[in-house]
Amino acid sequence: MANQKCDNCKNRETCEGAKPNVNVHRISSVCDYIKLTMQFRERFQISFRGHRRKDFKLSPEYKFTKIGRSYNDSKEVLDRFKNRSYSMPKPQHIEQFDDWRWLFFAQHSGLATKLLDWTSNPLVALYFAVENIISKQQDDVFGCVWGLHLTKELFQLPEKGSPDDINEWVMVNSPPFNERIERQSGKFTYHPEPSNIVDDSEIMKKAVLWFFCIKEKPIVNQRIRKHLTIMNIHHANLFHDYDGIASFINNELFATVIK
Image (cartoon, rainbow, N blue to C red; front, side):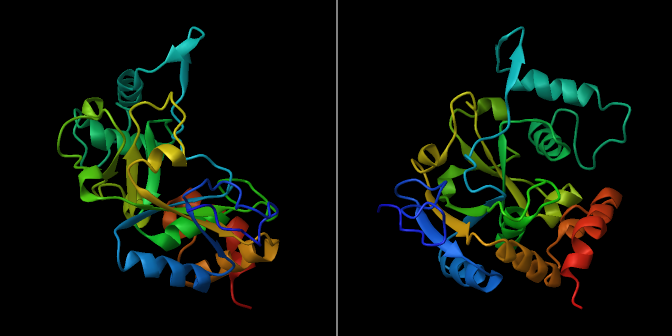
């Protein structure tokens, strides 16, 4: 099917960021979003990804250069991360040679990897579509949530094999060994060839995509954040450390608290 017309976006013909054959839906409240996502979630196993800019491409951050040339040895990058972490407390439940779990941990520590973050919790994804702490975006910038429906054969168990054994992108369920991953209901797609631009057209070769774009009014971002905070979906809960709590108090708490 062609893109649906998006009356709430500046681009009147299509929702910016979505491409042909992506199922487009517009939302202006948490209630709208829950109603739509639950219609799909009751029938399908869906992963969600929220992004603060709706023109974001579904692509991992992995990109390295070495002596002016493209450098694609992700194993060496991960090994360097592990080697420089020896003097720090060992991450829980991660053995030295468990590359999958080290990869998940490195991703959530900020290392650019071949992973793309998703969540099984649609409200967590919605938070990342409206937050302004990590993205530093103002409320005149509008985000989106991607919904990804995968069949069972596209899942890879992290207990089996190594990331280097993967030839095509797969979804990997992370075991809840890290509090942040657990709180965010995190899972990942792994893209073995990120040098090729990964976007929704490649994803759609093996999966079904939904695109939930947020109505382009600053008050909508603010209202969604407030309602998510009431449901305990906020920065301090999703990033439960001293920095996360301080950032929440500084940036969100007093704007979302019920007067």
